[in-house]
Length: 190
Image 1: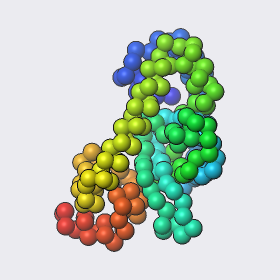
Image 2 (image 1 turned 60 degrees about the horizontal axis):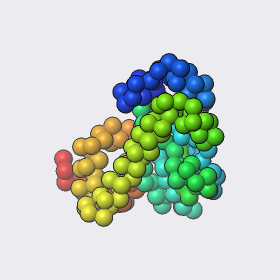
Image 3 (image 1 turned 90 degrees about the vertical axis):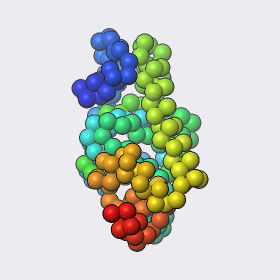
Image 4 (image 1 turned 180 degrees about the vertical axis):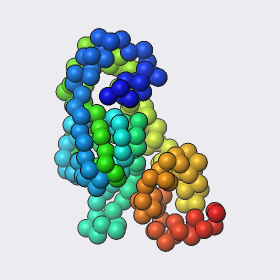
C-alpha cells in the first residue's frame, strides 16, 4: 500500500487524514497468473491500482486464439473496465492477469464517499480517469493512423516493459496482426 501512497503523492499532496480515510476503504486483492477477475457481462465494481503484476483487457471469442486484446496495464498503473465502472452497466470485455498480480481496489460506492469526504478524492479520481482516457485515445488514434509496424515500434518506444513482460500472441492481437505477421515485423526491425 505504500507504493500506492507514494504514487499518489507524486501527483497531489496527501494529508494523513485523507490517506487514512481513503486507505481504510481499499481492499487488497491477489490473483494468480491467468485469472479472469472480471467476466464479460459482469458489472465492474472496482477501480484498482496494480501494486505488482499485469493485466490484459480483451474481448473473448469462442476460439481463444481469436480473442481480441485491446489493452494492458502493468505495475503502478490503474486498471478497471472503466466504462462499466462509471455506468454500472455490464462489461463488454474481460480482465485477466498476465502474471501473479496484487491490486489495491476501491469499490464504486466507497469511491463516491471518498469524493465527498476528502480533499484529494476528486483530484485522484480525475487523474485516474484522465490516465485511462489518454491510453484509450492514443490507441484509437494509432489504429486509425499508423501501420502495424509503426504501432509495434511505438509500443516498443513508449512502453518497453510491455514488450518484455507480455506474451507475443497478446501483443500481436493488440497491434492488430497475427502472431506470424508480428514475427515478420520483428525480423524487419531488428
